[in-house]
Amino acid sequence: MKRSQKRLLALIASLIAVLVVSALLYMVGMDQLEGKPRGFWQALEWASETLSTTGYGADASWRHPLMVCLVVLVQFLGVFLVFLIFPIYLIPFLEERFETRLPGDCTTAHNHVLIYRNGPAVASLIEELKLAEVTPIIIEEDEAEARRVLDAGHRVVYGSLEGNVMTRVALCKSRALILNSSDHRNAAIAITARQLGFTGDIFGLVENPLHRQPTILAGATAAYTPRHVLGAALAARASRKVSPTVAGVQNLGHRLQVSEVRITPGSVLAGRTIAECKIGHDTGVTVIGQWVNGRLNAAPRSDMRLEPGGILILVGSIENIARFTEICSGTTTLKRHGAFIIAGYGEVGRKVAQLLQDAGEETRVISEQAVPGVDVVGNVLDPELLVQSGVQEAQAVILALAEDSTTLFATVILKDLAAHVPVIARVNRPENVERIHAAGVDFALSISQVTGQILARKLLGKRTVLLDQALKVSMVKSPKLVGGHPAELRIRESTGCSVVAVERGDKVLVRFESDFAFEARDAVYICGSEDATRKFAVEFPARE
Image 1: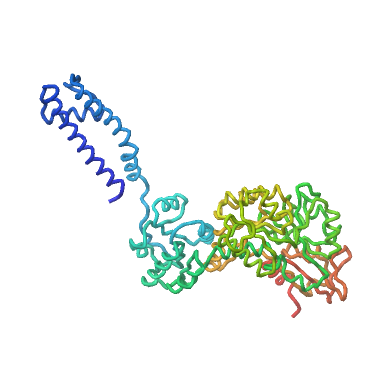
Image 2: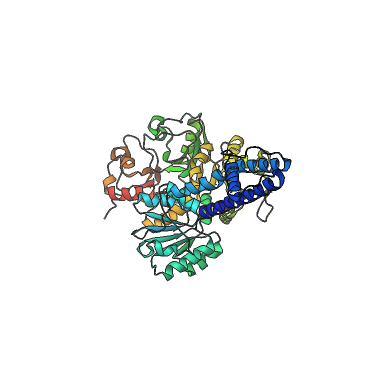
């Protein structure tokens, strides 16, 4: 029996008891105090009229003070019951009777993905599955959460492991089972699924890294710790030593270097296109990418707009990059030395610090808890503390905080103190990513995005954008290049790759005048994403 039904039965029993007690008291009072005896049914009629506030019949006045007090007490009790019954008992009962019933099974589903328990960690995965036309079905134990999932337009089955819900979700017809409950529940669900004959993939999302192996032993195909992966992604974005901005530049030795520059709102470049700025012609550097709101445009075309606050990735010689910063006023070169300030020292913060320290980077950790590994104890929202921590000279600030609201406010404070310093942030709820970017964060990543990428790759064989954005310099030779000019061949437009340099004997050419033409002996260095590099290989195949 549902809770509202139990409460309604209790209400009815209570009303009957109040009516009977009031009637008996009225009988005694009328007999002993007023000298006008009343029978039970007359007394019951009076009690019902008084408690329901509908009025009286024959009895309308009393002389004895105690009798008057009894009548007044019962009258106020009746008024109180009116205000009590409707909001607390009747309205919830009626809402439950008329609200949409939660599905308790999905036995007809086929080739679907089951997700045990909803939450931020699986939000991006659900959308990825829908885009791939794979039906995600969420098994939810909490009724309120199940209704939120249903209202959001997702398929849900309301039930629990103890209620044998796994037998009502077409388990053996599903393509995978995702475990998003507590670690011990995940293990129990995995064991149950295997006992029911499920042979497909089971992926567990665990909180404690020590629980990964037990989850696998319980029957999971694989177990992941999203917070650790998130920490690794943040560290990779922060440090070239963990993950270089552009791989393969070392092939050119010291002739070329990669530089990242921020375009300030007052820059001469802000709002203009690459073609309008004539960056390559005037400075000799090549724009190979632009970061805007945490997204990398890895195939910059000549009509790409240079966004205020964006970060350009440039390749060129030391002299050419120096010329760029001299000519293009209003740009700030990102520092590649100094400490990394890490705010927050939970699972994510510890992983970020570990990876940066293992790579030989200097770190400075801020936390409110004085635990081993913390360098500065205090509130990250204290501007004086941030200045004392050295944020103005930092290479970057990494916010690994537990609350998104704190992350947003900390970003505003940091941008006021040191607008030139990159801010990299962990976000808990995916819907807050854009809001935190708007506050000034250069790169924000949520656990949902991390989990979505991992599981989308496993389930759909696809890569999502945010964690896999990478640029690579490759040396190529192709007969189709010989005699052509990069602009005439439309290399960037057709493949997404940029020609960053041409090695011709002992020379490295980075500026391509109108009379330039590729020669057969040239070693051509291109830069682009993995997809762009593959397109280049198709368009301009190497010698056989």
